[in-house]
Structures are given as C-alpha cells and as structure tokens.
Length: 191
Image (tube, rainbow, N blue to C red; front, side):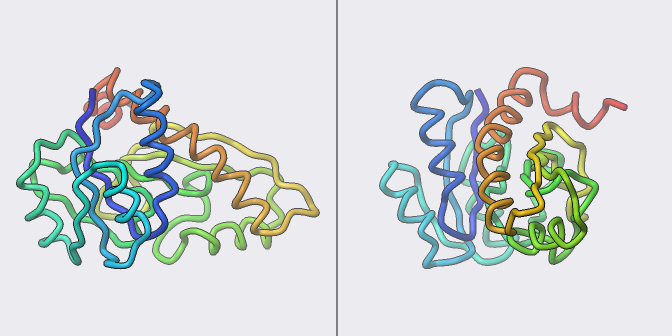
C-alpha cells in the first residue's frame, strides 16, 4: 500500500475520488497529507472533513519542508497547477494526471479547459487522459495508464471535459494500484 501526499490547487474532485476508493478498498493507498498552494482551495476543506492533515504551502521549498515530516512513498498531483520539483528522495516518485492523451496537447499552459478547447479546435475524434510520472519538464515522464474517450462533432469543450474526467476517476486509481503492484522503478526502466 502506497503512502501518498496529495497536492491540489482547487476543488478536490480527485481527492473525493481517492477517498471514496480507499474507503471501498479498491485503491491501495493511504493519504498521509494534503497540501494546496491556494489557501482558499475547497480541496483543503474536504481533506479536513475526511480527516487528512490539510496544509497550505506556496512553492516547492515550502511544500518539501512539510513533506519532510511525513513518511511518503509517492506524491500525487491531483489538479495541482504548478510545476512541482520534489526533494531528492522523492524524485521519480511524483504521479500526475493530464486531461489528454500524451504526448498530444501538453506542456506549459495546457491544462484543464485549455486542453479541451484545443482538442475541439483540432477536430480530434478521440481524447482521453494520461497518468504519468512527472519530471522537471511538463508532461514528459513515463506513462502509467491512458484511457480514451470519443469526441463527437456536437461536443462542446465542457462535454469533452466531463467525459474525460469520468475516465480520470478510473485511470488515476488504476495507475496508483499498478505502481503499488509493479513498483516505481518498473515504469522508469521499461522501454
């Protein structure tokens, strides 16, 4: 079972998903701490309600100072909208989810609604989400899980976003369970 730190910037929808799946015993993880770079993040309120330590910190140094007080196997970026640089002992131990099929529609500035607008503008017939390990470059670490969704001509970016988020709720726990089962090194060393 992986001991996780969860970093978030917003509403905590992914935290909700993790919490429910941990309770249902379908996610092999234990949340040690939740940290947000936004003091007003709804995700912090949810973390407190669920009984997780919920802390505000801005910047990598402040976050890493908090993480030093916890026994962490993996850091999970659950809608964290900054480039996170972990301390040495957590390098290659940061998981992120991206709302597109990497390597498409990625990089600085490509997050959330911007991704779905770009998918729609390009005329894609499929989109999806990618869970991947994060490194020092946006969206370039090893891929763990990808899930696909159809994109219809009549779809709005919001409709695409809703469909993709439904798959994210499956993909992220699936990826965490795979990392727990196969080990972190497996994903960095394959290929």
